[in-house]
Length: 147
Image 1 (cartoon, one colour):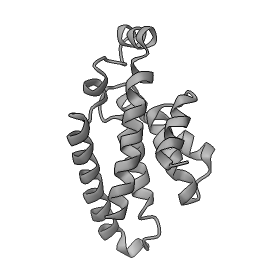
Image 2: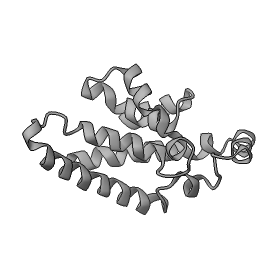
Image 3: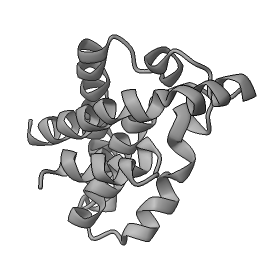
Image 4: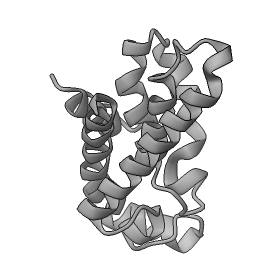
């Protein structure tokens, strides 16, 4: 099973988009699944339902940070620059593929309001749209890590 498939399965089991993406990478970094779930919990819905950066992207950003985890403290500035470059590439590629990077724009509703949450529940908007965003974030992060 691919990492994107794993992330989609985690999302399909009721986790948020950020949890799905980050936990798909966590095992490869030696991070306990429960820890990964807790760390990424607040990033769903565009960071705590604020509609900002897509949770799938924030989960991928965390994974990109861990990709440089073996960096010695003295080389932190260089690792940070590498990570910043990778994050920019992640966001650029995701925007090219989907037209936006903000949750509210991607799903067309505001999850931070009771009306938006009800609309999502009634129409299954995130359960319909977000699996594709989860897959994309994983695939693009994998590509960026290889570059």
